[in-house]
Length: 479
Image (cartoon, rainbow, N blue to C red; front, side, top):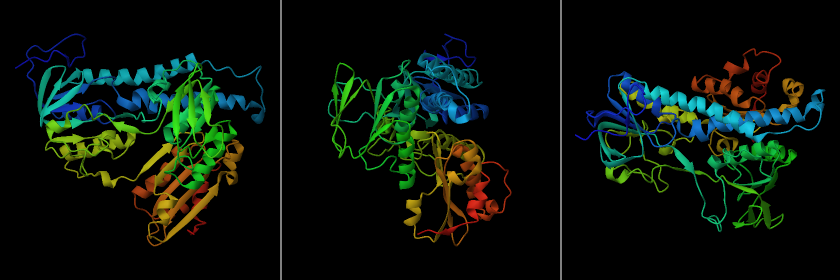
């Protein structure tokens, strides 16, 4: 058998290779995103000789170009924003708040590096686990090559994540555009950032860089921002962004890019506004695509849809026996928490005789604007189309004393309840701390308890959460 020259020793010592290590493993894990490392460690601990493949940076999207770096920047942007509001809270500072983007980036990089290097050390120092740093590709149902080395395994787990889509719009190849990955590497504040795409990623960056000091314009093809959300969420968020100076251009039916001396001009065919937006930087934030196009799925008999998302059943198994797909590449969740739950589902199946399923989980996520939008279950729009008798509770943040004390009165809370079962169907907490507060509702949903489990609870005063019981005591039929 050929020796794997790209393999890294289980001890993690640099440059050590296995000259006599066989190429057969019990399990191969491709990718070290949120699901991969935990699964690889569990397999190795169970006595299964395991190989882990990573072609780029350990930790995948979340650690390197997703949750950790972006939320680190969000924290810096919020601190800067609050400092500028000093007069509102009764204090003043000498001169203007000065943003040092190089230091902001250095803080972000240090936090990313801590997580990235921690995962790498974990993988390289786990007994019974071999790390291959290179690109893996299927050459058969249970065969993967990495940098010329052929590996075999009875069980293979795909955890390759996704990347930003580059849309086919006129001029896109002539303009030095950015995706979320490139924008994270900036150590200067753009003079004018134009964001193409008015959804989750684009809006987080829009508010963030406006607070850093950029002029920001958001361009959206649809008639409102974040169309997946309810209309009042979209309208409220647009109002918050515009109050901070972000320009929003909706109904952009024809978008084109053109290089200029300053950077790029973005041509926009909107019902209102100038036809060209002169920008120094352009961010394309129009969705993501799975990293499966160079994985050799056909050689393994692994089915996928037209967009490249791998077809899986309710327990993450692909159409190829002995092959699973976890995380963003299987199309059943574009979040770190859903990827980790995929790991839990697969591990429960393999080791615990526990038939956990993708369909067991309740949709939940957050939009990390300020204030954040915490979401669980169905939306108002989905409730109206469900055919279920629904009760609704609503509370604007202007009527929450804790929010007034903090001068954080933007947003609202809403809970949807099944009138017959009295179980909670969905909730949105669009408020300061909303990404944390929504979990108190989510946990009751998972417990299948009636809404009275919260409405009769005594919450601490003064908090944002204390108004959730009050809100649930004032339910009315959904119109």
